[in-house]
Image 1 (cartoon, rainbow, N blue to C red):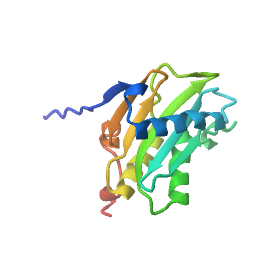
Image 2: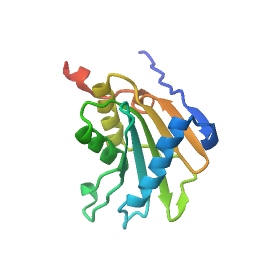
Image 3: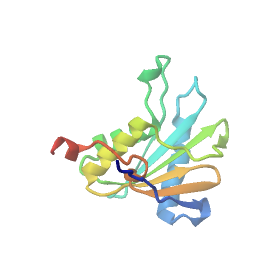
Image 4: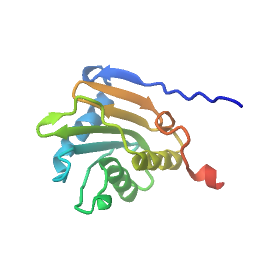
Length: 160
């Protein structure tokens, strides 16, 4: 029997320690929370994606009374970015949540489905995506989805 240990390197910083580029993406994610349709959970999530062409694309969670029919902010932003700018590479994604007028006191982490979509987006880009998980006071900066999804399933697993 063997043991495999998996770890993640995560940089934790305050909002003021971010680069100007990171700040722009985080601010866009904050603004995106206002587009959230979340009448059931009241948990508003905003995501912003920075593309290599300089565009920032945003998305917010969209709930539905038939719960599985909604869509998370991350997938909304990533799918729109892919549809609107199919040749552009995703460089960064910022995610933050808000309840009422207050941003979350804990970082907002993507669900399993969103992690899988980020994994596919990295495969399309051919490079890791910087992931910024945000709270009101701090940001977890993660260099690539493997830290959050160590056994991701992508094109290479299908032999593509």
